[in-house]
Length: 299
Image (tube, rainbow, N blue to C red; front, top):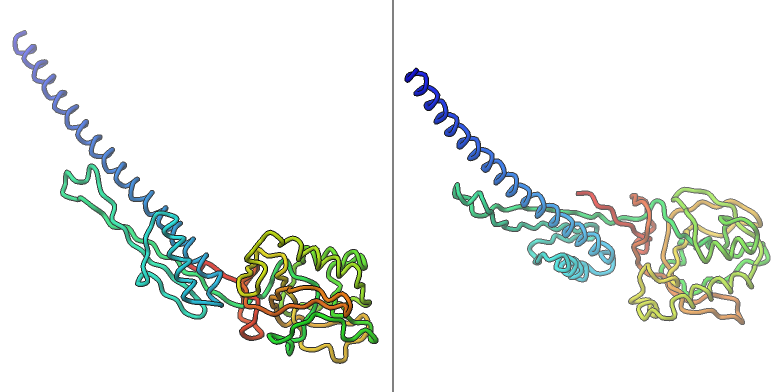
């Protein structure tokens, strides 16, 4: 009997040791989970910050590489991360940001790991749009870019005033398409819309100008961005020569045009072509420096 009681006591001691070892094991696992979770969270936040930095910088890359860097740094700082010029690579068609931060450990310090570095990188490429949205149904000859200043009906005797039949429903459809735009792809063909329709066209362009009345950046071609209604995106064609009445033209590019104002007596819209990034899918077919560009996050 005494031997049996001693056996029970011995087993009780083994159990206590076993439970103690399990507690140490589970605490260790918990510590690892907490520190790994902290690393994962920091990595995720850093990745979002560099993604935002390159996407923002890419919006102005076609106009100013230095400004693209500045915007990238500002956006990263808005997300609580500091990036320097050495973290940014900029060329004429891409911007890349790489950053690394040190994350302090909590439980890993027990085994001598005080900090762990996590890194993230992101790259945006900029290229001519192969398909755009919000496109105004007024076709521009390639030779008019970038020096053309007026959108004007120069060919009324042949029935064409530059309008494309992308909205349908006659003059009211044209007015709506100028106000809201439509979807157009490079190498698409489109039917021309005949007639001058100046009344609805004037109303549509005046609506775009009035929509930006309270936006200071939209009042100048130098500061306007794609949030401005008075910046329109136009399909580009080779030429209007030989186009008569309801004919078919091929779209070879897209361009951005800032509206300065309307000359009602001459029935023309005044403004200038500008370099701009717009919404849509990018490709490799363009019309020169004054393409309507797009951005794409590639890493």
